[in-house]
Image (cartoon, rainbow over all chains, first blue to last red; front, side, top):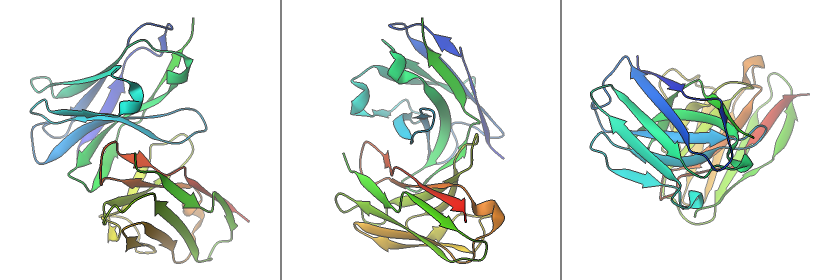
Length: 119
Length: 107
């Protein structure tokens, strides 16, 4: 079965760029009608969808991030990535990478990785 | 953006209780709604998609209904492992959005 695993620095300085990678195992990132998403959750709060990418490279983003987010895909490595620029303390959260199926569901989810923005 | 509201925000219930959570959308979303269960320190898990379709492997005590702007998640007989936070989420339009969550606690 497909599994997703996030990786990246746990601490990012304010105004710097956050960079996370999601490795997909147990299946190809190019198979099926799937899209590949980033979702975040500040401690004790709800879930916020950041954006998604298809294996073709087509993307959609949440406008609330004001064009700071960039999602890319590397099909040769079976992984996709998130860059979030000009981070502030408000970007401190657990970041999840998630597979999406059409307009149906998000599943499976990675375990999540905590990113703290602090000097 | 489509806003999703959930009620109640918190509910206290006993094992064996029937529990219903409501999700309302700020505009019609057809049946593009999913429900997730999240336990502390864990990633969410999909329970229901397309408003009423049970995800493979999920217990049949979970059911979903509704369309357009009003949706419900029902747990027919609450089990100890069901104490968690539940979120609704819409796929009708960008950006995809989640409800604020309903925490189900032990009475």
